Amino acid sequence: MRAISRVLVANRGEIAVRIIQACRKLGIQSILAASEADRENLAARLADRVVLIGPPAPKESYLRIGTIVMAAVGTGAEAVHPGYGFLAEQPELAEACTRYGLGFIGPRADQIRKMGDKVFARQMARNLGIPVIAGSEAVGNLEEAVSQAQKLGYPLLLKAAAGGGGKGMKIVRRLEDLKILFTEAGAEALAAFGDSRLYLEQFIPRARHVEIQVLGDRFGRIIHLGDRDCSLQRRYQKMVEETPSPALSPGLRAEICRAALVFAREIQYENAGTVEFLLDPEQNRFFFLEMNTRIQVEHPVTEMVTGMDLVMEQIRIAAGEPLRFTQEEVQNRGHSVECRINAESPHRDFQPCPGRIEKWEPPTGKFIRLDSHCYPGYFVPPYYDSLLGKLVVWGEDRRQAVARMMKALAEFRVSGVDTTIPFHRFILENPDFAAGRIHTHWIEDTLLPEFQNHERNQVR
Image 1 (cartoon, rainbow, N blue to C red):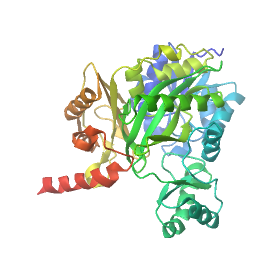
Image 2: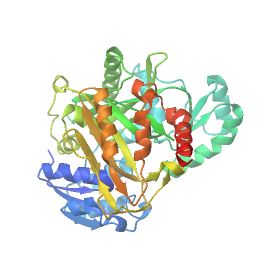
Image 3: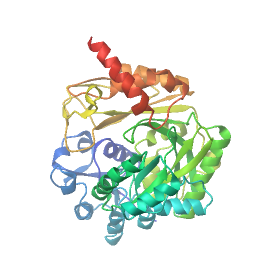
C-alpha cells in the first residue's frame, strides 16, 4: 500500500478545485501545478501550495511531462492527479511517475495505452462478444479508405485511431466527401494525438451516447455505478448530461452495464474509468465505442445519485486500498442533470468570450451543486477550454430534476463575459428534450436553427 499524504494536482480550473477539495476531505496536502495565467484562480487560493510550471501556453506548462514530474518530486508529493484533458490519458506521464517513485492517480500505463488505441479497443470488445458498430481496421491511405468505404456503405464516420473527443472525426456521406475529408481528418488527428491513423465506422444518424462509470482496484474487484446519457452535444462536445438515461429500458440498462463490466475486467482495470456506447433507439441495440481512462467531466451526476465521491475513491484506489463497496451496495437514487457553463457567446456561433467576470452569483439550494473555479473579478484567460463551471441538480425523478435545473439557470447571474446559460435554458424548455426525443446531432440539426431564428425575432 502506498502512503499518500501530499498530491500534486496537474491540472487547472474546476477539476483542480474538485481534486483539492477531495484531498482536503482525506487530510491530504494539495500542491497545485499552475501556469502563470492560473496563479490567481480559485484552485490557487485553495491549494496548500502552488508551484509555477511555466507560461500560459499549455505546451509550455500543463503538457510538459518532465516539468510536472519534477514539480512533484521537488515538492515532496507522493502522487500526481492529472484530472481530465491535458496529460490525463498520456501513458508516458504514468510511466514517468513510476520511474520516479510517484503514484499516479489513474489506471496503469499499459491500460491507458491499450484503450488509447481505439481500433484495438474495438477488436477487444468484438472478441468479448460485445456489439461493435461495423467498421474497418486502421487505414493508411486514401486508397485503403475508399476500398473499405465501398464495403461498408455510406454514410460513414472517419475517426482518429488514437484519440477521441471529436478530434479528427468527420461525417462522410459520399465518395466525394471522403476524398476531401480524409487528409483533413488525418491532419487533425496528428495534431491532437501525434498519430494520423484513421478508421471508418458506420454512421448511425439518430443515435444516443450512453456511458457506464466503472471503478476497479488492484485486487481485481470491479463495479459499475450506473449509466449517464451524454447525447446533447455540439461538434462532438458534450453540453448537457444526465443520469439515468431516459432512453434505456431496465433490461437494456442491465445488458449495457454487464457489457461494461465484462470489458473492464478483461484488462483488469484499475481506478475510475468510463466505458462508452452508442445506442440505436430504432433497433433498441447498443454498440461499444471506446473506454476513457480518466475521471470524466460529467462525473458529478453519478455522485449525486450514488452519494459517492469519485475523486476520493480514485485517491484511495491509487493508495492501494480495496474498493469500499460491493456491486450490491451501490444504490442509484433519483435523477441528476448537469449543464456545462462555458464562457462562450451562443449568439455569435459560440465564440469563446475571455475577459473579467464582473458579477458571479450562482444559484444555491439543497439539491444544487456548482463545480467551478470562478468568482467576481476573476479573469477568464484565452489560452484554455472555456468551461467556467458545471451546474448540477438532483431530483426524485427526471421531471423534477429538469424543473430544478431550469429554476437554477434562471437564477444564475453572470456579467462581464457571455455564457452558454441562455442556450441551456432554450434546450431545457424544448418539448423534444422534455420527451427525450433527442440524439447526438439534435442540437446542430434541430435546435440551433430554432435558437437562431428565436434570436432574430427577439432583435426585431
